[in-house]
Length: 333
Image (tube, rainbow, N blue to C red; front, top):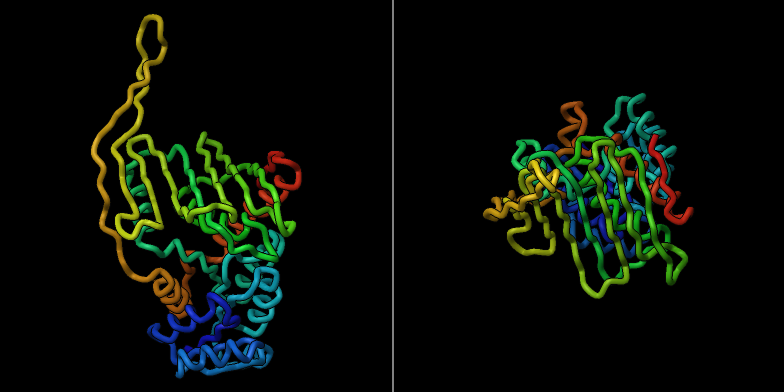
């Protein structure tokens, strides 16, 4: 098949590289209005076809699918036009700027029988897939909490706040790992420089006592990418900055036992071994691009389909509402 890549800023060239190497992809058409970006991609990937006119790309019947790597404010209109021209669509995260836009795109894809996929790249990493396996196999027991920290110094975004920029990654990971649907969101944050929140804390609640917490920050002196997952049997520590052993499984926890007498409940701590499981080292974006191409060829739904993107946007939008109302609890539909 022939695939177009729209937007050749930071992420677009990575998509061009991976689609150029993907099986079943005949050629890649790289599109951007910026001639310097086009020329740069042309030098790095001589086999790519360069196209400055997005209208011409969308109307080209030989192009079966497009990957859109542009700011979130443009996602809805570009994806809508692409699908109205019969193209399968891969959208950079987040899927859209509002829940209403995301729902429209999901329904449009269903109505036209097209693949709609969101680029939640972390879902395709060996680390996150291993954590999914550990949870699904019951090794850590029932998940009690999900706690993430994603902080660094910059890069400040001009169109979205730090929640839409950084928390999107960890919310998509939570959605992939936790099978229950959240019921409410509360968020606190503050803006110090350009009017967008640059420090924020988001709490996502579930019916069964499970709680997820997300700390995101553009003003931290160090780069931290960590997730703690507590289970009733074991616990997981995920550190994406760690060059090796990104996932560690701890045989630690607590045991509650009833005892007659002065105490109704006795809490005991359990400390066992730690081990670092083997992780698949394949490039996540390569697997994502292959999943997109394979879903089109097989007419199946990709792992991070439009519905997965919709659920993440739903949480992000609720967090925005809570931020604007000083942390008020927002119920999810």
